[in-house]
Image 1: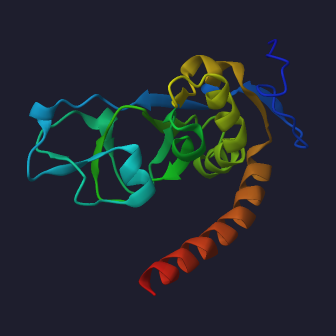
Image 2: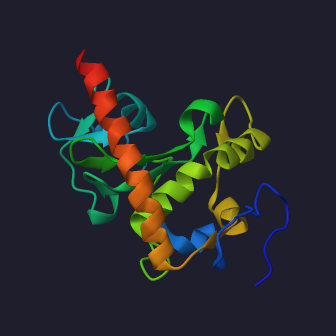
Image 3: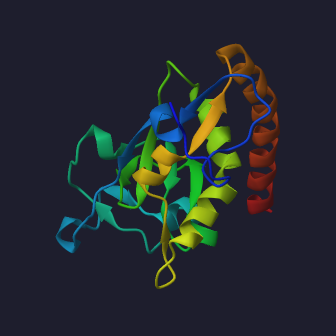
Length: 189
């Protein structure tokens, strides 16, 4: 398969493996557009980019509706916010909030387990954040930028064998866990 050759889309790698389109590494399901009539005082939170960045707050909307499993988010789901201010809104998250409903402009990302582990995909997407930011800046209009499905199809990365993926993630996960513990300590202080 021929991949886009531009440096922004053809991500260089020191890994030995097979090059895949980023799109092919997962199922990318966009959240839904809630209307004011969907909101209530109780129920599950509607997860927007603001909640991913700042947590549940007095500005969080709630709903008692049921929107189906594909829009339901729970602990440790992999999310990718693809729209907004490129420097502050485009990012990758492990979901760490109460169960809720996924708002638009955020993809729920389900790894294609035949090709990539969920953890390796998470760290790959985190590594790609500067690329995503630049893509969004290049498309920026009225302060907003986007990373689209077409961009995910153009982007390609080298994916090593599962044994290598697991070795890499075992090292990164220890560091990531320590950062999370330190962040929680700082918040509590």
